[in-house]
Image (cartoon, rainbow, N blue to C red):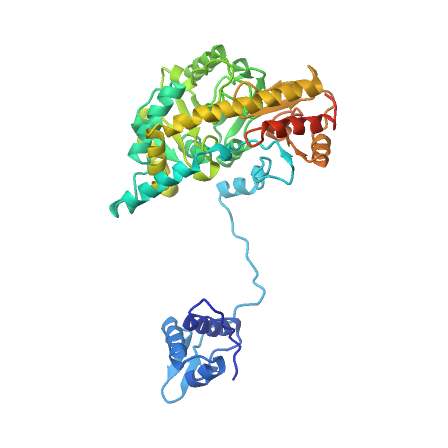
Length: 475
């Protein structure tokens, strides 16, 4: 019998011979009771040494695919049934949670995940990686890798590296007025995991959860997967309207420093009203401060957490916007009484975030390099923000409504009237300009608009992109 077993370079020959024989048995080419060619014949057929074939046979015998018969040879073991060429997958019943996940398939498709083929791409939700000090980061990474002990490569604290937790606590105390210490910090894999852990710890199926409308779709998906009942709260040009909050709710998720996606900034009076509402109905407030580092007009408003005297605010932060998304490090700052519970939730999810990356980030913050970089980044973003605002004013005068220019790294345009998002976006694409829709972020009645990020465009490209966009439609 001649067997076709193609051999490739770069992979152990014995392993290839074993795999070829095993595949012939599993596929039914060699049936139970069939005699397998002798090691001498097979070695001659394949042009390899007999020792290699003997090793393959030993593996087949050890795993029960073959059996030896004294004085007769080696045969395919009985009881092995050939696998059908076309596998038929039988349906597997999902849990209630799995059913809810299945209904949410594709929910993340709205946000741009990769630059489309547009010369002037106003993609949002990204950091300014072109200006990040990668050389300095590489030096810190190399130094930390050299100094790590073998012991430090074992499993680590689920809450995060102690040095990084203290560094984060110190930074948010200085920059955002957050009242905390390192014991309240839980290091997570980005703000998406932070929100997921919050939902797992605090939300039961059927709980009423208040959310801004519009809001980030990743938040909506997590809450719906948990079986929550969502209560959308309208957002205007000053952010969430506290007067529209439900009479009671388990929690409120909001983005007060740069509302996503409208960009509105929640004023102090509304912040205090939200805190009073939470105290009155016993709700938890989740403050997602994803863009809190970027404020251009006046001093940054105090975080909700800094105004909270009742321990009802959970603060969510991320380094995806300030450093780079691939780092996948974010953090939770929780009331002291919840720190152990959230550490357990993180441990159950994935044990802990990567230790080396955490140590490098701790050194980056602790050396003062992070805050120095943030100052440069703010100046750079402010310059590009100014170019965007001026270009929009030049293109449309006062006819184009815009929100979100005071902070963050994106603005939202509201053309008004019978604005057709899809047609406008397609027309912009024909001019090599990438802009993105607002309506998918609404839970209730949607309002048409366009999201324009500017963190990865030069001032010149911003001006040209807006000029081209203006030729596609009028406000």
